[in-house]
Image (cartoon, rainbow, N blue to C red):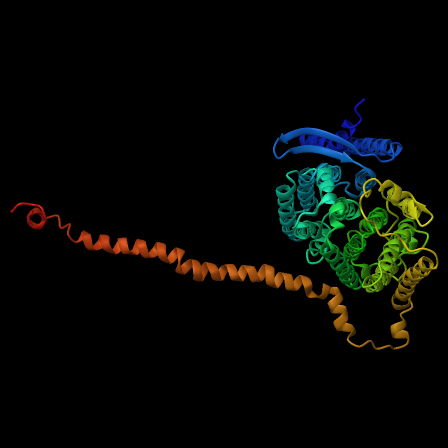
Length: 631
């Protein structure tokens, strides 16, 4: 039996589900839509688990499936590739999409576009599976672009709202900027290697690197910055919160925003030889982690806090990749997928019960009204804050320790990364405390625990958030073994050993607890008012944080309003003087000439006889004086 064809089945199943919902959407009610989409998701999880188990038994020897040859020379093939890396992503995407769809059946209930939501949802899942199971750069690019399209459809799902339509456009346009760089990188790869196939390119790179390797990596990196929302292309992600909350969970957890991280780990056999590329990755990743964490501290929207949190956590993954800790990057991707899906779905449950109120300052005291949601979001908060033994502690600690082990300038990177970890605990502590603990300002009599179809997915994600971190610890290197074949020829940064690792872990845990404690002292105990503390420039700092250091305003002023103003000036001055001026000048010349010529048209026969005689004499005179004509 040719098991490789099951790879195609895993990719095709959500696509077929989406097509079926598109064709028969008007005939389906909510119950039938649920039956189709949930069972398809269950089958997808089953197939993904089976294929992952198969390569697990084969010690993660890759499986290849060539669908068809598109072009013979250079060889362009539609092919799929399943190894440890793509296997982890495949199971993660299909598993989380199932849980989020279960949540969506309750959250999206009664929406007039209920079936269309699941149509877009399944198309998104297909796009991401196509990306991660691609066997070459071309198929990856197809998935890369389709993920951008499907995210646009989900973000602007409620396009009747002007803000949702603008958010979808912004996400689409900023991702096109990154995708343009990605496409240039692919063309350079094809020009040098004469193939898009991963294995052929990586094997060739191990023997001799192309002269323009750094440039190729930088162009591919621009694509990763767009998809994974890194500075300067990150501003679309907070605005993407205009879409349905379960869709936000899907985009933020293990799909679109992690595409850039996945791609960089996939190309690690090339990336390891680009020192410039690695420094750019860790530099921008660190800057993004700090900026996004600073911005999250003073956000008021329950979802935007989590959005900036995602940007910051993606920054940690880029830090790991830049330091050569590829296993740590994928490990944090996995753990982040669970606790961020938990936090987003928990936020969705709160929004649902608060009748679509999203301002956390208008909440408070929800722990008694929503105990299950409160407990699950508490687990997610502790996990992202790096509190042991929850998932986030193991993965974030591995990133920090790996960066520290590089030595030299990386000690500074480690210190700044630790600062970002402290800030993460602080703003996430603030987030949970203001929602569930602080005394409420509004009447909460109509607030109740979320329906079971919402709380059950939260509990499932809560359990995974507690235990998923144990797949890769200093005592059990499970994920490292899964990725061993993928990273076989890649130099990977490993953890320090002994006392150094223990001290680093203590510092990491201390940063997490300190951040949470400080959040409690400020927002619950109100230490600032109690001791009448005066913080210099507090209002200015708060405004900087709330407005993301005015980066969005700067971008809007320069690239939106500035380009509009420049285009208007070009239209008025340059175009008016050249294109319009030339065209209008020629037309005016012929208009005036024709008017002058029209004076000769008198309508009198005697005038025409005179003209005829005059021009006849002129022709005779020319004929006589022309050379070579006898007199």
